[in-house]
Amino acid sequence: MARLALRNVCKRFGETAALDDVSLEVGDGEFLVLVGPSGCGKSTLLRIVAGLVAPTAGDILLDGERVNDLEPRERDAAMVFQNYALYPHMSVRRNLAFPLKMAGIERATIARRVDQTAAVLGLEPLLDRKPGTLSGGQMQRVALGRAIVRNPRLFLFDEPLSNLDAKLRAEMRAEIARLHRKFGITTVYVTHDQAEAMTMGTRICVLDGGRVQQVGPPLEVFESPATSFVASFIGSPAMNLLRGRGEGGRFRAGPLEVPCPDSCRGEVLLGIRPHQVEVGTGVELPVTYVEQLGSHTHIHLDLGGEKLLVTREGSVDARPGGSLAVRLPADRLHWFDASSGRRIVD
Amino acid sequence: MSTRAWNRVLLVIAGLLFAAPLIFLLEVSLQAEGHGLGGRSADLLTSAHFENYAEALRRMGDFPRLLANTVLITGLSIVGQCLTCSFAGYAFARLSFRGRDALFLLVLATMMLPDQVTTIPRFLLFRSLGLVDTYWPLILPTVLGGAPFFIFLFRQYFLSLPPELDEAARMDGCSPWSAYWRVFLPLARPMLATVAIFTFLATWNDFWAPLIYVVSPEKRTLTLALAGFNRTYNTAVEYMMAASAVVLFPCVLVYFLAQRLFLRGIQVAASKH
Image (cartoon, rainbow over all chains, first blue to last red; front, side):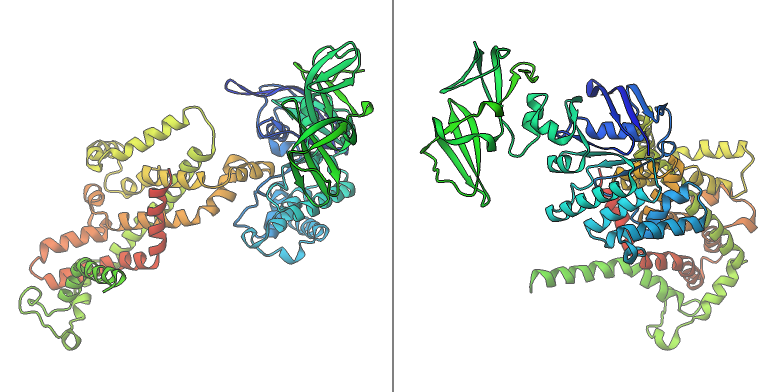
């Protein structure tokens, strides 16, 4: 196990800044999820921690020791890749044994640790098969095994479940969480899937444009997004963000007028989760589109040219062309500065 | 007749055209002495002179020695070619270093140089090193990665493997060298086989380089001996054809055994950018 700290890490590829002054702490045994859209820099950050990519500036510290100049093999970190990266010419047994063999561990110990790892992951029947004969889920288990067998002080996961179908993804999510509980190894997990971020991490770090937008426990990030980007990225469906003007404690956007904090002046964004919009009373808005999903219904409303999404459990009697009365409860509203996107504190 | 049937007929005709010289060679090699070109027996089932082969080998000189020389040169060339070209291809495909692409273009550019252009400078170089009448001038160019086409083949092959394999190997404790040796080289087995076959055919059949560098009779290769045979016994075409058939046999055998790999190598060269 290890404490990981990133201090003012920057990475440039030519003129493009992939990471811009990223500072982050990951506690001993913590499970931190790096989440963000494609190209936000999360995989680059993970590779910098692994030692596969050198940062342009900044420090990487493991247990307080600066490891910038250490080779990946010297950092005692294990990584699980999106496409598994198993060695196709080796059997599962040899794949699991490979990092131990490279570390110069003696044969008997390698055999014992491979057997132990195979038992933990249920890989015993597959030990003599080649990766090409395995299913996606089995390959991902082997990739996990290859990381676990080393008993590293740091686990790094680079979108490990992206290539699996939805059912298998849910199973593997639980499996990884179980392994983290069992071994308690400090973990950094990269994903663009917010369901993974919300369910797996003890804390999540939202990245956008190479910058850290917010770090915190999943529910805190969900309930108090620090920026309009985090508000729109975390949560499915995304939070409604309505652009309007705040003046004298009132916010106006199209036909909508609600009370707002005094600090909301000029152009601001009002945020509200689709399931928190109340239906039946308030301002009447035209319905533009209805999606019946069985367990839920998504109703798209037109708010003076902007879209307001409302979700309700079960089916709702609403049709495009009709209208729906909605109310935005004051205690459910989030406020963001329209130009910087930062949260406006009451 | 259907298009498929027409295609088959055309293929049979083309096949016969290409096989005709080989069939002619075998037919003449089995004729009685002096009947190779005129008065050939049509009934080879009853009057085939298989003893021509034993006589041809006797007349070639020390056949086991010639064979051993050729096998040695061919074997070392194959090992040298596979190792150095795969190593260079790996470096061009998977390692990042300053000037890599320019260097690769330079390597590719050497493909445009005909062998004849470099023959004299190369001879002068080996002569100045005192290596004439040794096997080194026949083996060293392959060991030193003197085959840009094969470097190109390996590079294309290594480029087609997922980039995460490098990263996984590095995370598992590999240096670039051990990643090449333990991960990439074993994965390149199809390409190694292709390069081995190409090198085998080129070296086994090579007449030009042994002619320039080999002087001592005991260091001669099969192709040199065959050429000598040609001069001395040019009237005894039956024996000449029998000797040619013997020298040709391993090439034909290798081609038939490894036909798929041979074609795959050509496909890789043609299809990868």
